[in-house]
Length: 289
Picture 1 (cartoon, one colour):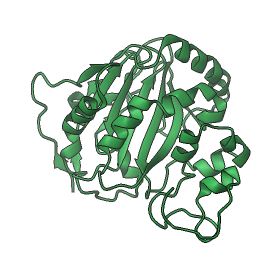
Picture 2: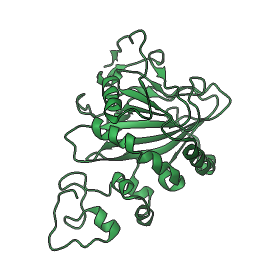
Picture 3: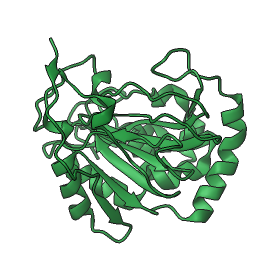
Picture 4: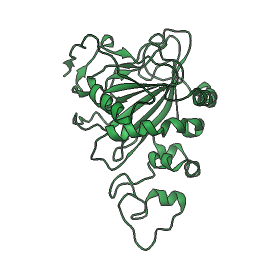
């Protein structure tokens, strides 16, 4: 059974911040409205490097095989090795601070859920509106437990015509069976280098690309440390590749115990010890460290 969505109040918009806005204010807006835009958080040099690294991989990526994935949309995953500059987005201090403040406060850790570039080609129709936390087998999470924060970084200017991500503000506190129409969503229009953050419970979808250029966004999502990751990080990157990454990224990938007695190896060792060859000492503990 589905429920008709409530009308969107006149004048509703997606909140906007600049790169100097404190994390607590961004988190407040995200929790209150389900989405927030931070403009020009990544500088032009970072965007240029990332675009150059990604270009050959996007060319090699096949288009989606169904309407949801997009028949003219190319989704390239495993960005941390294909496009090393993406680490600056994945582990951006402001974003991680906002994520930490926003996700369920009783958590021990949070982790990287996925990385992918999303290249929406000209003529692509709008994607079906959805909630990202539906990936957890449609489990009905309590609305006061935020388990996921998603981000889309604009690697090209996001306009309504080019297929900017569509968001339904304030939809994050409605039940999963509430269905919204395209007309109730708003385009997250933003200049290159900006990022839109939204909750796993927020209704959204890729926009229709009515322009003659490909719209490229970088999708980086984070979830609680005790949930399964959408992209299998342990098979996406080899141990040698992970060892070469910054420690913060290693921990985000899941090489950190997610909670007490969750995700250890060898009867009680932290996976970080496996990466770095640390001496486990005379005793073992299930506690994160």
